[in-house]
Image 1 (tube, rainbow, N blue to C red):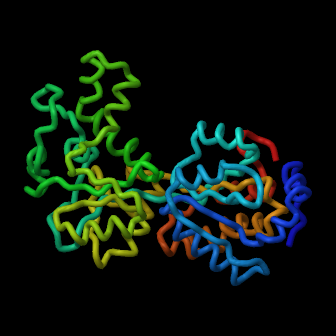
Image 2: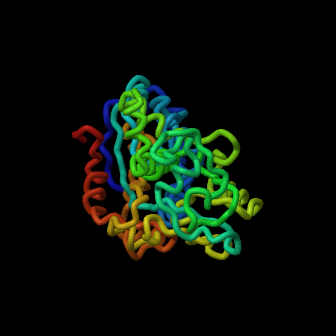
Image 3: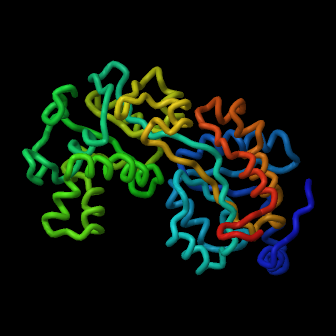
Length: 346
């Protein structure tokens, strides 16, 4: 085990909570359901290859994981937050208010968000962001006017899509996947159809129009999934006409049940995501509480192991499961080794 210099916060924990520290010798992790399978693979391998207990990995969504992470410093709080999006400024502020001031951001690689449906279901094979917006938005453009959404079937606005009732199972608001879905699909579709421009022309401020663009119908056609992708898969299994939003890796591990649609003519794959050609992709992260390094046994070792070439590289087990390796992985390795925190410094 490498020698790890304790920060002032870590020394404080060690001094005040020595008994509690001794009572917890497992790294505790919570957060993104997208990152969950990767973290689980790493945790299991870590337990098998190091003289530390296997880390405890929980799901719950990016926002929930970061909320727990930011609740404080000390052995009663989690050490790592998994996230399928970058931490937000308001979350950094919440962390700081609770004494969590030194945060190490670790980018593990990339993933794509895909639209998939029953393997033998309707021919949902090609979408654009405009299609998803027209299907789910409360107000859409019809004959140059912004009107209440009149569409009931996919074919109502795109004759190339099936004449099936619109039903989409989308990530709930506590999931990092929801933010990417909103920004890279719904918001893009809102702009592409001219709806955002019409909202502003109708008197909305740009900020209000941006918020309005992200709204989805509440009539049952858009169903929030608060659980993980297995819940979305179960919903698709029970609804032949439904489409679901999944991470690429989950889809690739369930091709016996699902078929995937292209987005703007590009098929999602590790290659098209790595090249940036596929338009709905995102980096994946985990965040480490630096004050816990040297207090929770194996925390830094776990972080370094996760992003090692053997694990997160292009030939490692995470890539085999579906993670798109980060071309800048070596830079992340150096930052973690130096315990560089967000905002600079170490």
